[in-house]
Image (tube, rainbow, N blue to C red; front, top):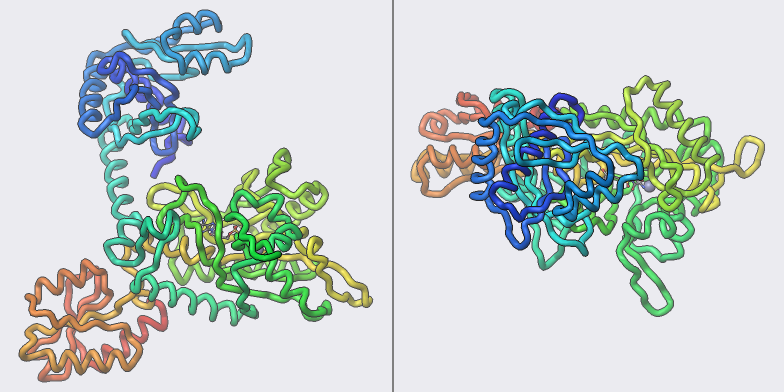
Length: 583
Ligand code: TSB
Ligand code: ZN
């Protein structure tokens, strides 16, 4: 989907449309007061104070009608230049605008835009006439705190989108509709993959049996892949003492993202937000020689983060997650090779899942932000330039982002876009010179001296939670056969004659570790076939007289309309091959 903010022409159009919206609202609700109406990646919105009035869908229709009227009447949009005093006089009825004007520095060049009987404070630029705003749509309305502060009044935020042509608008609306269909929260419910319950809490989804099957496959898949790459897996506790996190630096730089302390007897415990400190201690448990490195410690580990309640989203952003985590303890001369191996592992996994739409982001610190980042410029400069150098040597296409690093070091993040447009990190590979220092980690080098290793933090699937959200949206819930909760759905044409044969096939497949279901309900064949499709089961087997008498099966693959008849042995070979080769 086009990022409206990144396109100058569309930005101007959408910004002008925000004014058009405010203009129409002012006609319908003369008492309305306006805060801001910015362009966003998805179009525009306007925050409006309507007293106690809450805008509903019918109101949106009425506002749309009024906007169309103004469009039709072809009002010229004129720029007005103002001094601060003139601006204060012009907007004296509008406390929010007065606020904005007062916040502007003295001598600031102020402009407003006027269209007929409506004038709004604005930097511009705008289109020339309201008639250019013909192809818009108001999308939704929600409450939004004034200045985003929960102590302030709730304003009505109306969202919309505008395009130069009706075709472009229609295309956009179609994509929006498709995205809604792909939303993992919707599909997760329909396919019974996960659920949430207020009694458990926000951001704490529960994986249902169907989802748990997929997760288990993912866990086995990545664990096996890592074992082949020389990783050793461990299990460590989800709790740690506050002391541990004071040593690691989490206490100083990550406390706000952690759940509060649990005090018991003389102990202070916290739920861990990351696994690094535990893994540092595992490394420290032994004495290491330079010959032992790299040491790769992996764990599928639960972590807990106090994500804002407004930010939690299905499985995509949760408060308890399970990381596909590992910490690699390497010698400085091994950094490049190990980062390369991590990148290759990411690429190989993406190939298996057919993930193609992503970008690499080099996440750097924000030098000014002393609270978020460990304060050691020398260390940061070294880590950032080292990681950048490695990425350049690997010829990786990446962009840089300031203020996105971890508190302990820079990251190579793999960014994807979720169905509802969130830009989120899936995989990550991070270079860290800090934690080895904080935990006094060493190995004995060739000269018998104790020296520091470097740590690479990495998560390939990120977390199983977020990866699952991504997979659901990418596959639209139609998982590849190797992951599907049910792989084969057996449908006897008529229970009376074909159930026994159906049961034989069921047992054959089950004995071969295929996840199979026998639909023995007294329902019509067509109904059962349709349901098989609704549940997105990769293979439906239809068993009637011919199949029973000749020891055959007829199968239909999800997403196709033709039925193929083969011997049951052939089918077994086919399905096993499909699963093993992740087809
Ligand atoms: C890779 N210490 C490192 C680790 O060794 C770490 O914790 N990195 S992280 O903070 O970037 O988290 C790893 C991955 O977890 C991210 O790349 C992202 O894919 C996933 N993740 C982060 N926060 C959440 C969340 N709230 N819900 C679901 N997944 C998340
Ligand atoms: Zn880590």
